[in-house]
Image (cartoon, rainbow, N blue to C red; front, side):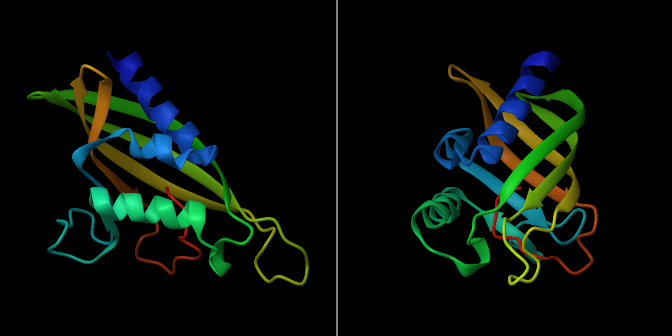
Length: 160
């Protein structure tokens, strides 16, 4: 089972790296959440978060990334997720999964565009609550715990 879960997490990372955001949306349950908290054990709706997306907010985020011109994403970020240390524990009708991820991000540019062409590395522990259904695994919650969440954050206009 761990191998199936690990492949699912790898597939999600590939969708994000390939900018296959519609496919990424399809990995979530209708009631799933995508959260990037500011506080380690912050509860969505109770503490501030960098991202706290339900289905509608995820769909809106993806729609805007694919269909609107945003200066902060011109040119769009390219990312490469490196996933490791996947641990999964059965939890009732689902699975609690944790992984370590390093997300390398870069936006092409030239010397006239400050900050473009510089690689950044985002380091995080990513926790998932997964359900297994007829279509395979589905994300009930994805929670990205940024290692440096208490520090200044640069361009966050991409999906972790």
